Image 1 (cartoon, one colour):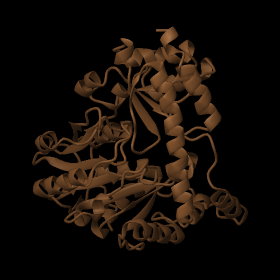
Image 2: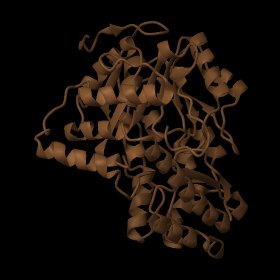
Image 3: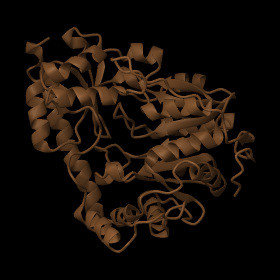
Image 4: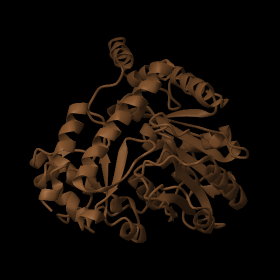
Length: 411
């Protein structure tokens, strides 16, 4: 493995240097300060007005006792220094076992797995490894906000394929038109944030065929893989023709309610993984040592645990949905993740960003405007939409639903 920042690495679609000239994303809050995201702004408003924050997607309950105890024990036993850059062997073995157990995927933990600082670092390292000026990186829109920022840093062009209401499934003709011979990477977030959709097998098969036709790498963000409500999760890497060009990414944060641990992972063909690892070496190098063994414990928990987290979230989804419908929103019921998208148009509101800035003071609830997950055209399509998170305690969601039901009185 080379660590020369000027080295050229081979990959499907032709060689590209991984080191690129960065250009940062320009994030601007309503107060005019650079670097302020809508998430920070809404959170600050929620705190100021003592509102229930259903904007940011983090749980307010701890994860399973088994993994919390394992982390405490690791700290007490002195596992407090750097882990290997590739990740602890115990976690890499557990990741490989997880892929085999749930999806029948055979992954070599020695050469085909790396541990990262959350899924976000894996995504960043993968994009920076394979895309740069002159390339295109294709995502679905709305898209998780970090995708756009990292694509900007890579110097590549960010292209999109829209997901439209009510089902937010990829449209075959639109997707085919979005691919070009400059498409270097297609990022597949499934289950999808913020829409809550779970992509159908036929859509994923089309993505694989188009990636193969255009010589593109597939980077999949599957952090919500276990948070589904009946819909089947099909990892892209399991599909015919996909394995040699697919990098699969997931993390512990969402599954085990430990978002603050920032432990993620990436798996795929050894040659592609090695190139991602080269970039990762110069990002964080390594990630929280005492948490890695604890996450390995979590990945080995019985099926009953995985079934229970999905069924509990379903009840929370339904509870929040009642409040959102009572508020007068059109509700797009999610098949996965812990987010619900709504349309405020039935309330006569076409500017959800303005509404998001008013909600904390208006009814004591915070949400995120969907337009913030889009480019300009997509922002216009989703102008009246909001995203709410239901990964909170039942009593918090109940109170949030009660407050939401009063919205008609205020608008």
